[in-house]
Amino acid sequence: MNSQNEFTRLSHPRRIFALFALIVAGESIFFLPFVLPRVFRPTILEVFGLTNSELGTAFAAYGFVAMVAYALGGPLADFFCPRQLLAIALVSTSLGGMVLWQVPTLATLKSLYAYW
Image 1: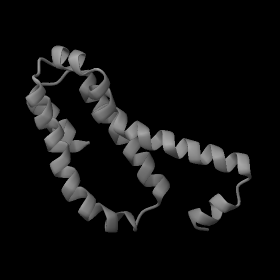
Image 2: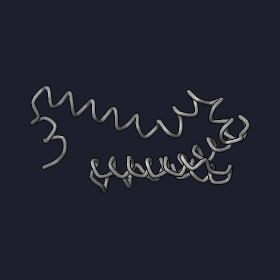
Image 3: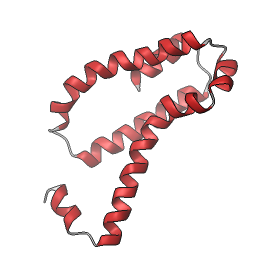
Image 4: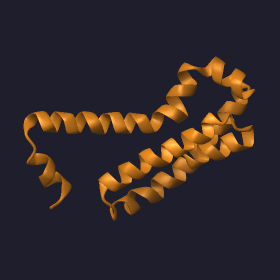
């Protein structure tokens, strides 16, 4: 049974809950790398001992890897179950959060953003 048929067989309240859970999961993946530094930028810069430019290089590492990964990842994603991919994305993002929690060096931070 494919996932589209599973979704259409759900009751209306369960569909709403499933859609809400999907939105929260998707936003959670972007929280650590983007929302946290955007909202708490002065604190992040002070705690990590960074300048805006250095934090920007970490963002650039994310952007460079993402540009390549999106081109290759789309066709590759067709071979895997969306639920498994979402679970892997959530777990791997949280593992990166544990690295961020350790207040890494700039080089590690760049690697972390490339990983994310």
